[in-house]
Length: 106
View 1 (cartoon, rainbow, N blue to C red):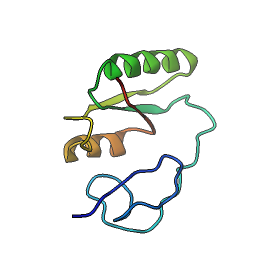
View 2: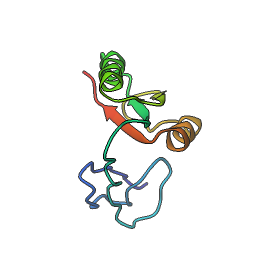
View 3: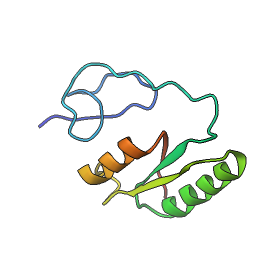
View 4: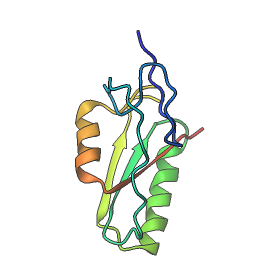
């Protein structure tokens, strides 16, 4: 069994590599470039299902939509806090979202 850890700082140091669901490539990952603007972006939301995380991320998406002309939202609700999105949801997110936010609710 390998342990996969995702480091939001972009550093690699996890046993077994880093990356999205099912990733087995141990190569270090880099952060995606930050867009200059959210105008026209499709926002991805990854909800862990804990506490009020979905309500919080929905409110955040509404605020961002008021600040920038978003092209829509792709919301993924994970089956649990300690599991990655299922493969279908991961595909919807990576194919349909320009930028994504995940949050840990409690």
